[in-house]
Length: 151
Figure 1 (cartoon, one colour):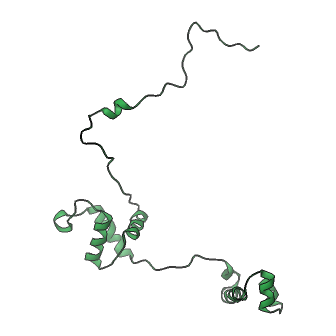
Figure 2 (cartoon, helix red, strand yellow):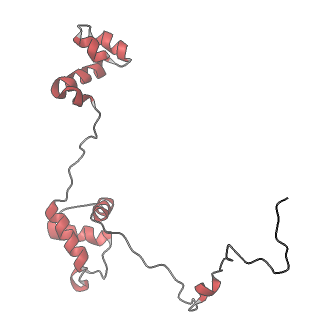
Figure 3 (tube, one colour):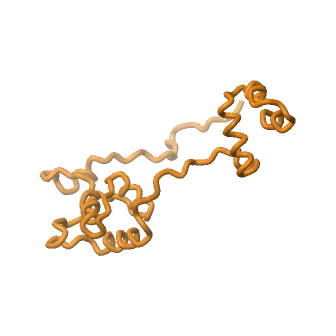
């Protein structure tokens, strides 16, 4: 309504009052409408900072994860995010934070896997013995009980 009133010749102040917004917002709307048309009025996600990783970096990351670390070279027997951050710096001189690398690794389809903890002195088969089995949902009625009949 505010933009329509402007194109009919009213002032931006009057258009701001019609739209219940400030004059600055009406000005922004006019600029967006003049540059992009009605599509410019739709709120979009801001572009944000571009990714530090290129497609070549991602391909090298996939290869490094698939190959695994070499203990004598990388100083690790399994990849942790902090180890991969260090590997990125040593290989490409690209500084990347752990949360960012975690998002990238998840986007590549990898998940963090860890073994379920088990006490070192736990007896073999103790968990299976501890688990309780639930009774079956349906059981045969006893032979001596009378069936229920509708009245």
